[in-house]
Length: 160
Length: 160
DNA sequence: TATACTCGGACACAATTAATCCGAGTAGCG
DNA sequence: CGCTACTCGGATTAATTGTGTCCGAGTATA
Image (cartoon, rainbow over all chains, first blue to last red; front, side):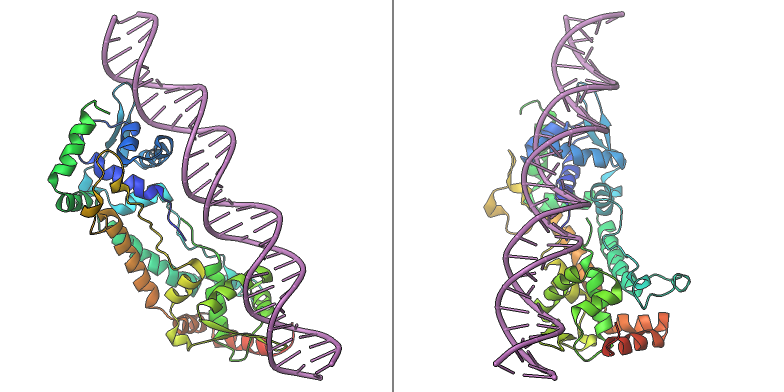
């Protein structure tokens, strides 16, 4: 099992968007991270579809965070980019084969699936406990406040 | 992100192997679950490579649990079948682009990766808290004790 | 000793992910 | 008011991973 690599890009983009309240084009975000501009667009579209960021079209358009960074959790981003479905899918294997459990006896989910989904819930709960604002703060304390400040001036300024 | 479907098969096989202390051939496990015998073999090989089950070759060979069901956790099975690597891979995106963080400043992992890995740890911890014996007990209470007992006689008996 | 049955790894196929391109739409400017 | 330049958005194509299958090596049995 490997998570889609686009999740990493999307998270970094959200953190960067924290530093700018004016629309930032996808091309600029791609150049900042040195990644494919066309593919990054796909992830940003997924974020826009989930209403985490808002797209502004036109000449000086781009993307802006829809909500405050404190109210955007990592779970929101993961669900938007990587899909909302559960990672473990139960194929109801107990209803097949010579010892198949009759369908009417399957009122509760299979114990195997229940345990796997409980673990997934723990994962989601941990993701929901961290917000984009938390990440931005961590970046500040790690790389120093001048890092995001410099990025902000680079984003708003026209220099490429 | 979707977990490999073989994990479900492997877990069910481990639960079934609880009911038999004599070697069970892969073909019989496949017939019991009504799945592809050839493909199930792949998953069982992965379990054998991780020393969760032991393979017995020869005429009346098959697979047996290596350890007691109480000491085999779901995490063991998931790691064996789905790979031990982390689901989130950090590509060190912070070291790229015009505002790249210098490599010598990257002593601690990227905050984004740290948060994602913390969530993964919560997931693994939940998986490690459940054992195959727990699942077998849940199956007993759900489907009644006669279910696993019937399977046991079917496994040891030659009828196919 | 021959045999029949087992596992084990090497070999094709399909689905998902990654990456790219071009068209639709809008804000700014003359 | 029309034009241009810049933006996003979805449809299209390559690469990787997961899925499924096959045949050969090895061993306990008779």
